[in-house]
Amino acid sequence: MRIARREWVGCLGVALLALATAQAESGFVQLTGWGGGKPEEIVPQAAEVGFNEIIVWNQDTNYLRRLVEVGAQHGIGIYSCVHLSDVKDWKKRRPGIAPPLQEMNKEEDAALSRIEADKSKGKSRYQYGGEPVQPLEVLTAPMLCFHAPEVVEFFKEQIRNILAVPGIKGVAFDYFGYRNYRCCRCARSIAAFETWQRQRSALARDAAQEQFSLETLVEFNNTLARHARSIRPGAKVQCHVYPVFLPEPLYGNRLDVDYCGQTAAWYFEPLWSLQKTRDYARVIFGQEKKHFDRAEGVALVGVYNQPKLYPVKGPERLAQELQAILDGGGDRVQVCSLNDVLKDPATREVFKRFFKTPRRPCEERQ
Image (cartoon, rainbow, N blue to C red; front, side, top):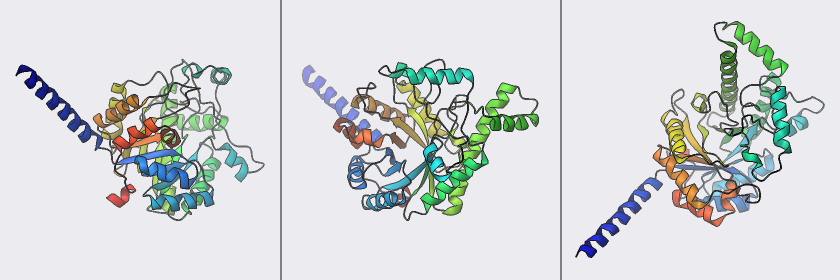
C-alpha cells in the first residue's frame, strides 16, 4: 500500500511538473531570428521551428523582394538591418570619400592588437561586443562615427531604400554603439562633447562623458526610428542593443522603437548565470514602456554552433535559458543566429518546444 501511494505521489509530481512546463512554455508570442540565406530554404525551416520574423544583414532589393514573398507564404515578417560596421556600403555609396570612423585611445588600440593576435580556441574568452570578461576589451570591427551628420544621412538613405521594398515589415538596427563600449575619441566627437559639457559645467568630466555618450547614442537611434516612420507610418523598427554600453548596459527602454532586443543570455563562456538571465529579463520586459508606450522588450539569446572554435551551448542549457526568460516575465525572443539554430536538430527541437505553434507576424494577431 505504501509503495502504491508512493508511486501515485510520484506520478502526480511528474504530471504537475509537465503541466507547469507546458504552461510556462506557452508564454512566448514572438520569435525573431537574425540570419539569412536562400529564401526557399531558410524560410520554410524557420517557420517549422516557430520563427515568425527574420532579420537579414542584406539590403539587395531583389533579394529582399523574394524573401518577403516567401516569408508571406509562411507567415514570417522580414526586416533588413542597418549597422555602424557597414563600412563596405559606405565606400560603395560614397566613392572617394573616407568613411568617418570611430577612434580609440592608445590603450584601447593596444587591446585591439592583442585580441586580433589571439588565435587560441575561445580567444581567451573574448566576448565580441558583449559584457567583457578581460580587463579591457574592444570590438574588432571598425565602426562609423554617428556624431558625423553625414553618417546619419547615409543611414537615412539606406532606410529609404529598404522601406521601398513592397511588403517588408520594417528596418532593424545593429552595431549601434561604441567600439570601446564607452565613447568615440575622434576629433569630431571630442569637439561635440566639449561643447555639450560647457553647458553642464557642474558635471565631473567622466560622468559628463558617459552622459553625453549615452544621450547622443539614444538620439541617433531615435532619429533613425522617426525617419523610418516618416517614410512609412506602419513600418516597424527593431533593434539589438549592441555592442554593450558599459556605463548602462540595459538602456534599451530609452529607444523609441517597436521591438527592443537586449541581451539576456550571451553566446560565450563563461555563460551567464540563469539568475542573471532572469534578472535581465525582469528589466527588459518589466521596464519596457518606461519611456515609450510603443516599445516591446525582446530578450536576445546567443546561439553560435561552431564547436571547432568555441564551446557550444547544448539543448539542455538553451532550454534553461529560455525558461529563465519566461520566469523573468519575458514573452519575446530574438536569436542570433537563426542559421545556427536550424543547422542542429537538437537545437531546433528546443525552440520548437517553446515556440511550437506557427505564428503570423505580430500585428496580424492583435
